[in-house]
Length: 280
Length: 285
Image (tube, rainbow over all chains, first blue to last red; front, side, top):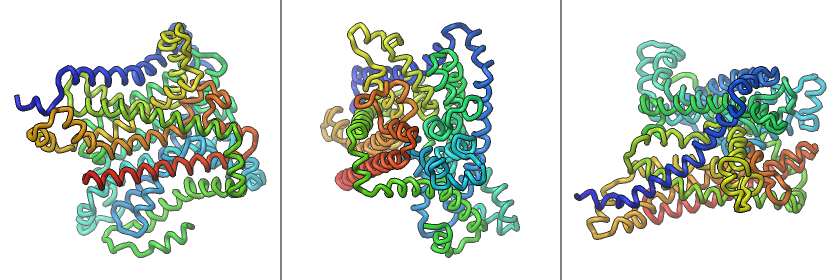
């Protein structure tokens, strides 16, 4: 039994396992169950009726719209940044990579605040916006900007380490064989990073649809116009319409579960196609 | 630094056969500047308008000071709780085999995926005096939701994945032969764990704690629903920024934000230094 010295006694093992499972059940599983339990508290009919509210429907549409703008823009940025950083050597590269991660260390509230200071009524460009009669703060463009800010690093940080690992040999071969630069990217680089790309898009989208703090600062909470789903959850909750709030929350919780499932599947099935940190 | 200056500065990349450096680099830097760098600079400039003593005056008003204290102390407490349970969770996930392990592993990322507002109302419902957990404590006269304890619960939830996900890969890559050597030399299992394995995990653990702490200090969505938001008791700094903004006190909001950014930056710097120190002393990454 030489393995005895390399593991703990059964009592210790069971205690640690019980602690970990208990902790995760208490802090992760229970809140998730609570969302669905509260939403269904008055029965399935009341639950479904919550979605008939036109303001809730408008919030769902706005959330989809914002994600549909923010995610593709960050996708184009992520691919550009990864191509420049991973395939070329230039001074200031590590600074660039650090700056890309910056939005992760900024409070969501501050992420919204910066745009209010820039475009708000008393902001730096506020008078200009007034002259042009173009509203950014308390309107959809501000919500989109704040969402782009908080989801900024997701796709780039999945692609950069993986493309760095992969090097440039395959692309050079394609170029030597006469492919154009764009064709090389489409037929050589893109297939090599497709799972990491999908992984980054999934995380980016989940955060884009679920962002609360940054969006709350710039939105102005105008019903039916500038409320995203998380903001609608807040409004309904503060009006004591708990079933309504938790009904909208089930959609967001469902999105989180789908994201987690897809993420685990990618790590498990296509781990080789992801950055090293996600391989199990 | 302007985009043009950055471009000029980096106009001579090392020769490469691949095309597209100019356009991808140019786009990435322009987009980064427009979305992140310029807005953040405006924030700091707005705070700088007040001057250092102006920022100091805003930051040391009793209400702001109380909010900063609540934010930093409870975030530190939550990070410590996560240090303990996060390490246990990572240990169990790496070292033990049990049914449902893959599910448990996937569940750890839930706080990353679940929108903070959803987490906020769910935790508030659970820990209110008529909630599933709150009603267990109510007979003892203990209130959790709408007190600082509620903030602690929300911040533990938010920070949980950071410690697990930084410790887990390091533990996975740890060389088992070191533990064999330690056992061969006569150490008990406890001695091996506490004097050989845990010191090797320390740098990763500190990083995870720092990340959880930094995230908790800025957290807003999950906290405001469960905190009660009483000034001087359970009001967090990010909420105070929102309050200042609603009063159109832009300079005040910018000042508190800058102080928060500076303090979290210093905390991260200190922990990075600590990490470098422990790496040097222990001689491994």
